[in-house]
Amino acid sequence: FEAKVGPGRLLVCASDLTSLKDAAARNLLGRLYDYAGSAGFNPQVNLAPEAARELLAAPAPVKTQQPEKP
Image (cartoon, rainbow, N blue to C red; front, side, top):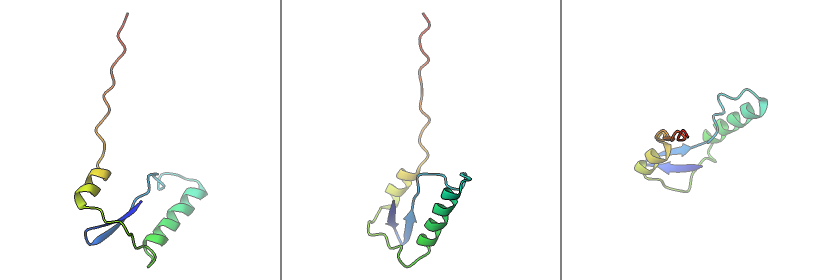
């Protein structure tokens, strides 16, 4: 997704393209960089900085319960 946040612009990709080694991932990452650096990158949605922080914060670890032993 993309958004205006304060005076800046934000482009988020949910996949960690930097850790993938295949050509498709490298191509997509390059195209995202090209897009983000172009005049065409002009998000229309405004996002409050607090909302951006909340969206991008690392989630709390999930607590799992161990099955009860019979």
